[in-house]
Amino acid sequence: NDSICSVLNDGFIECVDAISKKTMFKIDVKIDGANKYEVVRGGMAYFDNRLVFVDAYGQIKLFNSSDGNEIWSTNINYPILSPPLIYRGYIYFISSDNRIFSVDISDGNINWSFQTISENKKNLFTSSPVAFENIIISPFSNGELVAFLYDTGQPVWSENISTISMVSNFDIKDISASPVIENNTIYSLSSNG
Picture 1 (cartoon, rainbow, N blue to C red):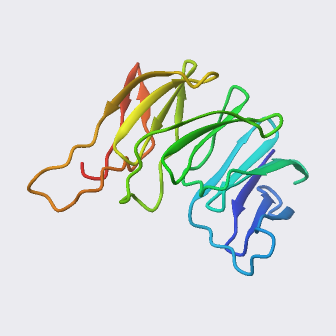
Picture 2 (cartoon, one colour; picture 1 turned 90 degrees about the vertical axis):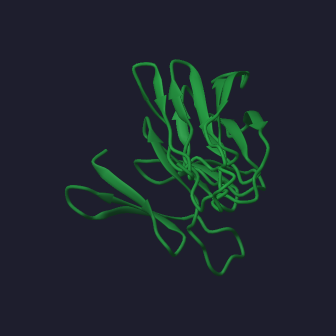
């Protein structure tokens, strides 16, 4: 679309034409009744003329990226910590209770969710799930990487990549960067190395 969209501190999504630099549209995404909007977590993703927005207020919104019209909106009542991933008709993200959600992009209904053990200590920002050959790989705050079948949520494998040293005071196990996949190898980074 030759446009750049971003979430502004005042609770609006603004999309600007990258060539003319003119604002195409501005969308108010603040929670009803909120005087102040805190942009801390969540994020946006784009695919096929659609813009997905998730935030720390539990909002999930789908917009037409050409005109900013809302297609649907829902709320999961948990803060969403990770940016969304769009893959094969579903939206994936991680909430504050250490749960991955799969939401149908066509109507906003929850397809499946899976929760691991939640950690009290975690990074301010949570990395995003990634997709590879019909598998969703999700990083969690307890240091686990878990792979799921994209459509059913059936766990395929799990690996804890973050260990705590008995001599270290740094006990955050959170995975601090989205996993990267190259040639069937997954690279990931935990907060404690």
